[in-house]
Image (cartoon, rainbow, N blue to C red; front, side, top):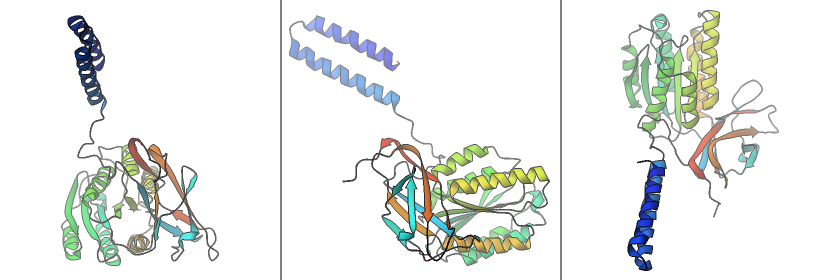
Length: 337
């Protein structure tokens, strides 16, 4: 029965009660209260939103603080470390926020390695495997890492571990064939990071071409990344791709990096892949952690963020971090006590 039908039925019941009990008003009033309460409960249940499914990538449905992992770069795109808290300004929806937490320490991360093994990767995979292992060796020894292999199918070939021997063995067993389900693989990686034990979550995706096999669309993946606190780095080995496919793949990787606060790289040779992988490890280990409470009155939905940094030593600093976050589920932030 619909809420409207239920409400009309309840009104008829109320009229019958008063006709039946006549002057016995206290008893009729009590029954009236019970009927109206039952109707309200039924209506609330009908309007309650469905709980997120098990596959929904939403690490937080409600936050009371925002934590940002930020890389600071100079004019030459070199990392800048050692800045004090006073060097930073954080804005939510254009309004400045006061930081409640700050650090610039190397902290362990949960990391997913998502590596293309489509047929076109056959002559590239040895170099990519070496680069992937170089990244792990250059990372924090307390990191936990998993490995996803993809072609036109996606498979988790090694779960979370800090044993590089296991990762090396998993990489060596991969066979190259099929198409490229890059978007599905990235989505699988973000979803698997739900099981992470570290607060900082990172994904590295390596591919050599345009997606041709995924079931998820780019816009859907970008929406997922807006809600998941995962930083995505990508290496696109696209130099041998036709011009139109190269541009499409490059734009896709850049969009994913921008939404997540990560970075995308496009080497011109296989020799550069390992150098870039090591650079990414260095980037991950030299970021600032900026924290602020959700401002009172913040409404549910996507809130935009901007971080600025200034220094007397460096000019033209830029800050790379996620450009926003989702707050709440139909709520408004309460005033700070």
